[in-house]
Length: 147
Image (cartoon, rainbow, N blue to C red; front, side, top):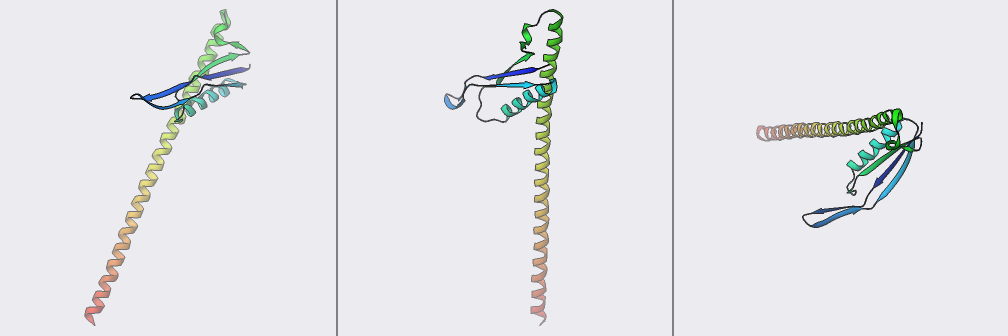
């Protein structure tokens, strides 16, 4: 089974309170996948890229062809089978997309925790250095006044 994914993004513009913020041009891409997982992974990559893109103001629309026939042109018994495949592809794509977002959040949290720990260690080190300096000053004063 060949799964062809045709993706199209229309022209898009972003306005905020009447001010033009940016735009994106229309574009299209065609990808051929050999199985459902590859198709879902490709769509998830596009969703992820769109989610993290600052320049794109219009999302991608996906059309799926199975063995060259659009999923909405099947009839009878084949329709149920194709509809199921179509739903599996999009649900798996959304699952992969959600997992990538969760991984990003976990990575950001881990990075924030590491930075927090590093700041804590730096603070402890500065405090230790301060104590050492104060002990040296105290020792110098002690020698000065005992002599």
